[in-house]
Figure 1 (cartoon, rainbow, N blue to C red):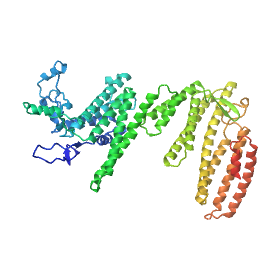
Figure 2 (figure 1 turned 180 degrees about the horizontal axis):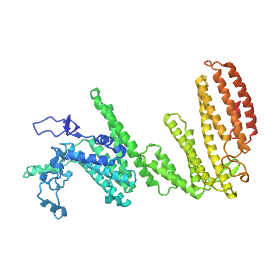
Figure 3 (figure 1 turned 180 degrees about the vertical axis):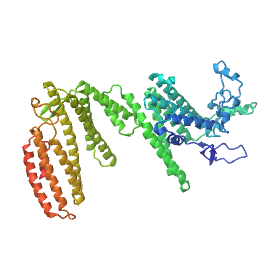
Length: 611
């Protein structure tokens, strides 16, 4: 059965006892989808865009509509005209609040206590449960708005923000006072969430109308009433209250309490999802529409458990284990914990990035690593802290990319992750090159001298090192792509399209190889003339290896161009023969040059590839 309460439709379980001769049947148990209601409200009123003032204003309007509903306004409104209602808070004599009862004004304030309402009254309308829920949401939104504005994030909700605008005195609050105000609102949100949990499990009976009947009074005290909602709604209320209490404990740095509350919320959401999944599989053909709704709820609770509560729980576990851990152990723990869900909402991700930045800054300040590099047979000292930090960042990014590449790219997620790490590594090289160019521009206005020339020689070699490492990385990736195309299509046979793709990659490789030859640096420091713009190429092992690599790339490019011309769709066989002769001649020259380079990296593999 279904009953309409306000604008909501709440599911009711039909009563099993139809015997109306003894006593009227009890009200059917009500089911309220609390989290589904909140999901709709969040997506429609600014929470997705962190516009918490807008959501707080919506909660205020929603509460006004709920409290002025005709069936419930007697219990929910704070007007004194309803002082005889069951929800009126009973003031203890001797307290300061008891003196307020002497006010006879019709619309004077009336303190209410929802816990005074019996279960039968609560089961009569859904607004009794929406009211504490939206009170909690309004306080939570106010706390989040204060926190966002204090962090400089701001909100787009207008009205001057949570801390006021213009000459509002809140603008002059200290960070400690702002945080205390945010925690105060969050504590109030946890109070309302706990009230909602209590109401869903209320078993209080209505007071007996016949006070002279002693037997009725004994029955009222010995037996409890039926809860106003079903077990599913009670589990949702407990999960919501545990999550809100966990948020409060998290802000107060009470990590153990936050762990317990988040663990309870996570367990309840997983239980709700499994319960919905079991009930969905047991649906018959008549309940297909209901089964679709159950499927949506299953996805909702699974997503909330994995993407909302689980990251917060892992963050609290990290804070509990942080004491006594070295920075390296902290980073490894965060990386293993954050690999489950790589989402922006995961607080461990921001903690991981800040911890890495602190570690890099410490290493760059102490000069313990990357204080010296080797480029073109010269040991170059890295003296500035900014350059050391940039090189250390490149080292970390390169390690992450290589580790991700070793795992393989068998699925789209791994491939996209590897591409993102590769682009981040290229960006790291660009940052180091930009920093070096800025320092060279500062030295360009100085007159030449031994100290200035030595500094310029140092920066020119660091610049060449950064450009070479970047080009080497790009060339290695492009050649791997070309070899991958050849390897995948070796059994089925290469088509014209495949030859075109490989030839295009070798065009890019040849262009990068020529860029390597033009990289400045090398030579002896005393031979450096201080001219950073046009310096003659230094004949060293680095230059010989770069020229040999150009010959190798030209040979392979000619070979695959010949394959293109010899394909059945082109059939230009004379041009193909000429290109094959050129490829063979270049391959012989490249083999001689590579053989002459004793220290060339991967020289034996390159020779085998040419053969």
